Image (tube, rainbow, N blue to C red; front, side, top):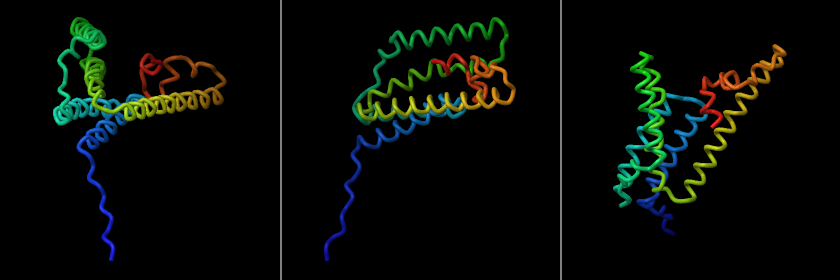
Length: 172
């Protein structure tokens, strides 16, 4: 009688890779299809997972990230938005909606703990999710065009309206 084959245990580095890859995939999918609640939750989970796994992988989180020009630019933009919400008495939901500007780069800072292959797969997933959301918007615009004969559905804000998206975010 031959012994049953044993499954080798998953390496300690493989679990963080899988968890972070899954969270990034959820985050990018939620960005592409404007699932704001899922986007917010996944950003928070990414930050927590990054901090936990960095310590586990002996890759401490570098405080110098907070001095990176991209992060500082996002922070300045968010602060200016917060000031306009206070000065012009806009709804607080405007601030909540754009909190990802500061938190998303912070969440992406953890991607250096992923290997190159995982980062490429995540980037490909983001590209495919974005392309799929663009196709959904184009298909909806084509259907509206065929129904009405007007070309307006193909213009900027109306084009992304099926996803309740922000035209500038979608174009970026």
